[in-house]
Image (cartoon, rainbow, N blue to C red; front, side, top):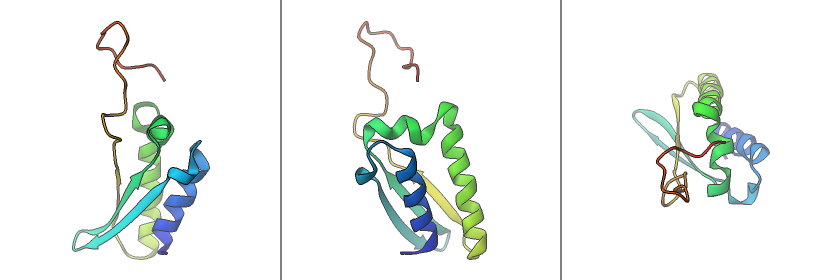
Length: 98
């Protein structure tokens, strides 16, 4: 397994409550390396973080890993079916508080 994929898998499995559901696919093309991350829908909040802060930090770390191997590494986080947020019981449009 390539270092960038192994690093991402280790990092995410350390963060989430359902590590067995973590899947990382790796694709290489002329644009660089694309890592696609899939996690249990219940773990999406932990991976994305408040206002995307955790996801942004993970992307920064992956860029550093990529520099070491002279590759541009990008991360795509697959949103679970139906979206991350569940509708509120009273029909309000405000997002859920995390």
